[in-house]
Image (cartoon, rainbow, N blue to C red; front, side, top):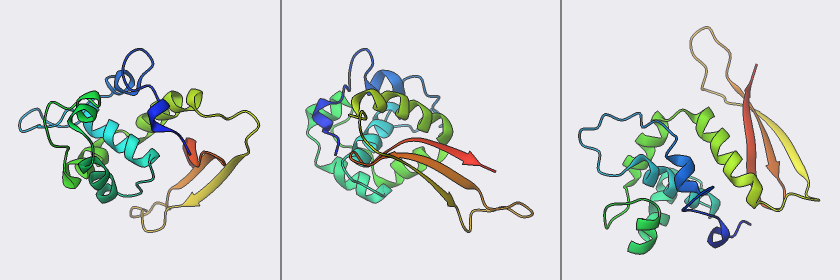
Length: 153
């Protein structure tokens, strides 16, 4: 498992700096939590074992004010589950996946580890007249981290 306390959040090469390169797909009106905060919380929650939007929001509720600040928050409370879900669903998933992989790989102890390559067909996700999408993922065994993912044909 990855030790979240050893991952760089702030400064050069940190998660926050990387997330600032993403384009916020939301309209400015009514935005309470910066994109950086919502995504940083989601990434850290996933690395800590959260596997759903609800689990990510529950994980975030336990964060201290100082940790929220380090994750770019300007508020005392973390974003809610609906906010996390809406923001992540609007993002360019391929770009986010690529950037997180680039940020995370240098911090994983990958030398000598097994790398699994796994393919999945996303049933029920097809559109009229098109086949269901396929995903190909590369996963580090020991860390349990997806380091790359691509849509296949």
